[in-house]
Length: 221
Image (cartoon, rainbow, N blue to C red; front, top):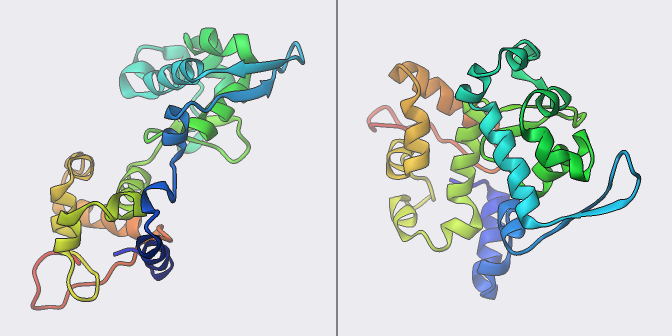
């Protein structure tokens, strides 16, 4: 179930009747016409990136960080650092991402586009110099948090019906109901590894509360 703070926000939004406009994700804001304004790192002149420009950068970024993209570029694989981080400079130099980036600047373009657009596949390092494909536990956590986010929960009758009187729903039922979470878990080899992955995902979330099922109950809660 969502944490108490998340439930409180959701309840206030329901009572006021403005739930649909309460929160817009980075992806939603981009689709609504957000443009990215920045200063070109080399010419020092203001530049404007339209939606199509931001999407082009994100498309190349995600395409080149997928397994197939990395497999096709030995030079890029050699640049991968610890924990899977890859310098943005290497991506710009060794892939077509550079063609989408150079008209608007350098490495900062990729970081700005990631912060503006958001990505389910790629995350940005704290120093904004590297990117990597999100670990599976992070992608699973974000998917579960999206399921319980106000913008989804308030219109998801099926999810509400899965809950007991305390607001908890079977984790097995939630993960098997939603295609994205089900597909993520299918990448895990064994039930024990799947349970460990779910535990890591939930333990790292500030939005969700996990209750261990009673001994007589089946599945996860």
